[in-house]
Structures are given as structure tokens and as C-alpha cells.
Length: 73
Image 1: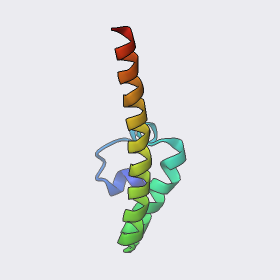
Image 2: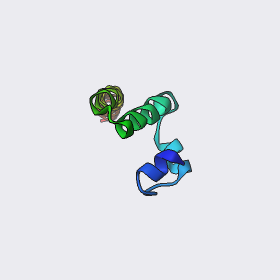
Image 3: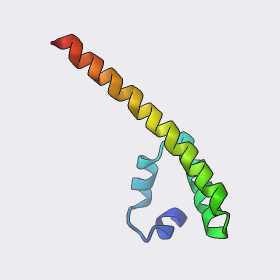
């Protein structure tokens, strides 16, 4: 509920838990807490690390999809 309140109730607790991968959940909450207490640079570093990991996973999935579609032709 804390994270939901921080973001102005733009989503529910369930939506947050479904939208965040379990292994990134604690890092996401921790970085939000750091931002609130004023440790912006550290919070940004954590979010950037999370973002780079999720983006690299998305790129791998996209490549696999492209490869599959090429094989079907």
C-alpha cells in the first residue's frame, strides 16, 4: 500500500505486484524509499539497474520472436 500511496493510487496493490517481477520487487520498493528520504542518486542507480535488466530480457524475447517468425516463412 505504501508504494501505491506514493504514486497517488494510480494502480492497486494487486496491479503493482503483478506488474513487478518478484526478484525486482524488493529493489523497486527500496529505491522508492531511498527517493523519499532524499537519496536520489542511489535510488536512480537502482532503478537504472532494474531497467537495464528488464530491457535486456525484453530484447532477448523479441529476437526469439523474430527468429520464430522467420522460420515459419
